[in-house]
Image 1 (cartoon, one colour):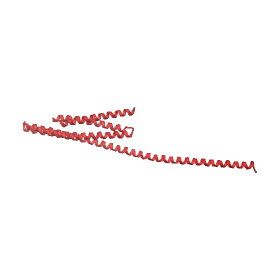
Image 2: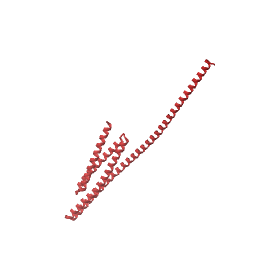
Image 3: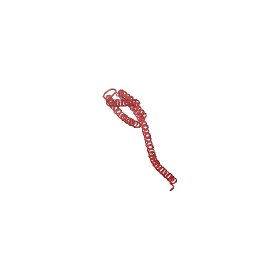
Length: 228
């Protein structure tokens, strides 16, 4: 029953990871196709951040489930899948960053074109400066957020690699212990075989001694009963 419950939770975790991954890809595509205004892009980025947060939590849950597995093979398999999900998330973060830069450049160019079409030059310059400042601030904030997330993923990957290395050393040590036990068992088998042979030899000697004793007794009786 415990194994079935574990499998169920692992499957649900996989489904949620795949769901969040697809939602993130869809939002990134929306960002790539976004033509403005900047408020729409900001809203899309907020949704992406939330999905990344949920995805990271599910990946952490999968890692915890892997460490709770009874079988070492199941544990290693889940840890391997978890690393694949992490690499996919890092790839999505990279695409997200590039899509943001491209979208913001498109919005900036669009706003510049609108300003050049007409209006008060002073007002145009002021609006342009405000838009540029807002865009620069948003870009900086997004890049810092992505940088923090990537840093967290690198740290988690280092922990996972350390865990894998520790598990590998444990497996090697266990293998060496098995080899040592195998040598001890073989030595014990040889000793048992040797003792069995010694037991057979001892039985044969006892039989010969008993035969000699009986022959001697018969000889003495014969001499006494039939002296001539």
